[in-house]
Length: 361
Picture: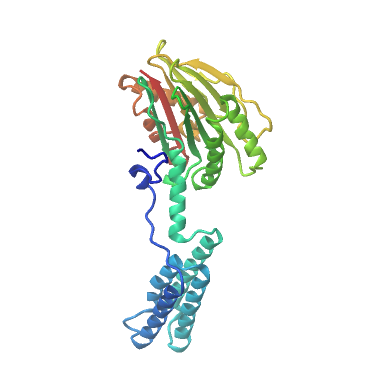
């Protein structure tokens, strides 16, 4: 009998992106070990000052910072600083030799305090952030499409940061006939936009596929208004595609226009008949829909402004450059086009970049 509940074990491609962690050991035994190690180093330094330097306290304090709760960290650091002060006063330890050690201990304590304030221990916090990043990326996974349909996506973050303001959310109907996707770009870049991207992705993930397509962007806009999102705004482009007829609906919230490649005339056409304002700016905003049909050989390209934006050129020049890159790859098909655009994006490493292309044989 087959299981009716989904497995909770992540597939290998996702598991390998989650950082491995060490167990968090808490309690009196670990505290006693840390205190004993600090005192042993202090006594050893007094007895064999030329062989055992006080800098040996750094690894012990680092382990305490990593594995102990903040009250225990404070106790370990207090004992360590007492040993340093005793050595400085009574053992004629030079200030120049102890100052780097004190600075290192202060930095480690600041890190421990910051993590404790946010409620995330070192390794557990790293695992949590890695899990959030994996889940955000997984929400945009494009499922296997019916025969004759293909899709690719590619993302790159500013300066190689782990988080970005660009993300996509994908949903398919139960019968597999309809594909719905939102590509969003939160203001800011890299880690600064990562937290807001996670919030907006959660909101869109709860709406897309459950609400009717024309409600998705208005509901996302209402969510940001209700949430009083004062840190910035977000642009988004929504695509709803019928995988049997090829009929597509595109709506934009202040986003660069989607591009439709028409194999019949061999040209890229911008789908920008109507665009609404960016999300979170105008209460009750409306988002007009543009409709088109993807025939055999056609493609639909959506992207973020990191692909076309440049400090020295305007967006129209960037779009011309992007379409030139797409034209150059036509003899080889659309495979790999999204990655090429992201890799060569006009903003370079200074901004997040994302592109998704859907095409029909």
